[in-house]
Picture 1 (cartoon, rainbow, N blue to C red):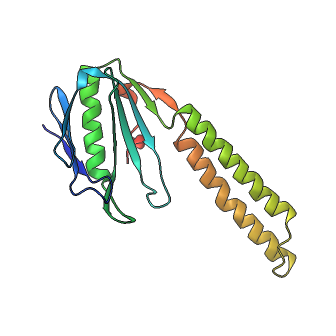
Picture 2: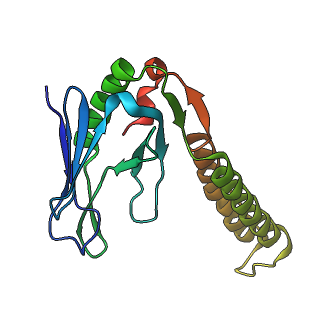
Length: 190
């Protein structure tokens, strides 16, 4: 069975990128028609990442790294226009699951990493802890004169209740970890 996935990366491209899975290779075709043929047997590592942005809260991406030094990155976002994005998660998930099956057959020793790279994750944690520190300072030290004390406490409490779970969710979903090709959790794909 041949799996095909298509998406437009930016509004400046006239057409879509296309990836076609064959039994031995993955063929990538750019909107200009330039093809790259990447053998499944040359995959040395794979990374699956949940990487949301403000306008694409559902964004996931798949990276494959090859012996030749080539790298492949595919995400589930299709650009429809300026600031307009389409979630192609159902096609993307089926495509990535199929690619992982091919890699397991042709390159069973390939490393699989879930989440961000350790350096990017550490930088993200530093930013998040800094932001939480600023929020804690604002909640504890800055006066918020809206009326009575209970209203002020309620507003400050709501700020913490919103920020803390969002931070925890990001920290858990993007943490770097290694798994085998056979034990990739379904939760890693949208």
